[in-house]
Length: 305
Image (tube, rainbow, N blue to C red; front, side):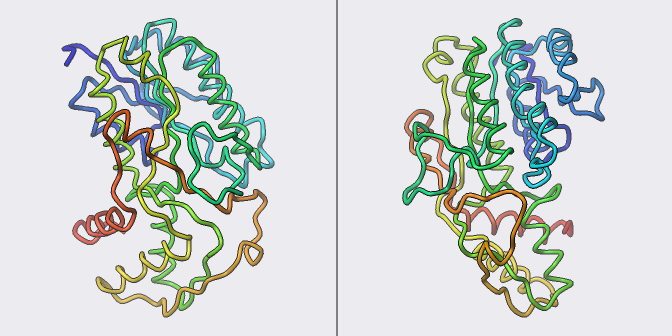
């Protein structure tokens, strides 16, 4: 390992960034930044990006920051574009300026969800909402910037921290007799820690070999193995929870997307093909059920709901 390697992680205390701060610590000095850190970085202020990167002069930049309020993005298009589209391009340009490599996370929402097989990296994107469009714009801006880069598309991210589906279901299961959950959207629930660990494995392989970065440069899909509906996911969460504590929830009822309208359209099919990542780096995440059991065991053992 390069003795003085510096890794700039963006995303503050977000669920992926929080895990990255730990998993990347064996690979170099991690400098984690967000709006409330020191040094601070607000991606809504694009003029602050290059000065920070030039100050830190990292070897790697890992961008786990994003505007992820999918429904609110429909009304806050400029904010979503600033964080998801403009900032990644400026980060990539700054990386090129200081000779750093960039890792950036994207989303299944770049696709329209009409497929009947897992999406591959070279399938044509067709985002259906502001969030997906801005994330795709960010991908394209990075590809044009001239640095070495990896884009890792993931989906249905959850973990022990922050606001996410699993934590919401656990809370609601304690409060409500019935949970009504959409059963006609399908994807792969993906643990934030596994995303961070996979990122660390890839970076450890690439190291400081610029030729390896040039060869590996591109988009990769990174989600748990298997597939589920949101109803499947919720049912598995509550089933495990019932074995550990008394909950109010008596049933998890399947509903349709039409029964739960939202401002933004969600992809009905969000399953991603992870074979390219496995072929290139030998990295493949376990089944989502295995990961979920591990996460909930952590919550049970450390009493952190």
